Image 1 (tube, rainbow, N blue to C red):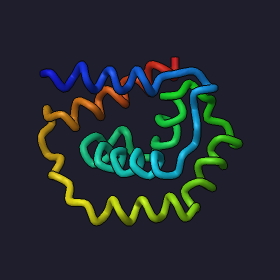
Image 2 (cartoon, helix red, strand yellow; image 1 turned 60 degrees about the vertical axis):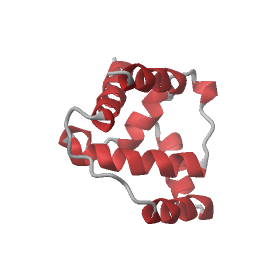
Image 3 (cartoon, rainbow, N blue to C red; image 1 turned 180 degrees about the horizontal axis):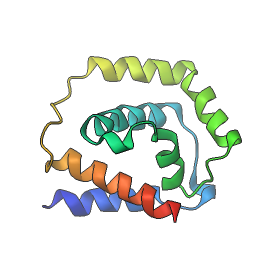
Image 4 (tube, helix red, strand yellow; image 1 turned 90 degrees about the vertical axis):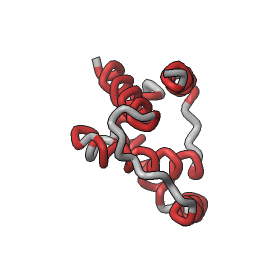
Length: 116
């Protein structure tokens, strides 16, 4: 259970003001890879990747920001990081109570809380 406070601390760091959002291709690629694993475990998260990302930073999910994320995903830095991540072995995410599951639940909970 020691990982839960760590995950919550990490989420707290992400949950800054709108000014705290700095779009970075490598960070976005890592987020996307993690979110994809969460989607596999929690179908309710499917298709909400960008909304959850922007809500972590308390940034409105308007067309401008969604467009910026889409453009960033086409960048060479993003593509290179995605390729690097695909080469890195990842442990299966099958345990519904493991650390990844807790992080996914924390991310989804924060995204839902920010919606209100």
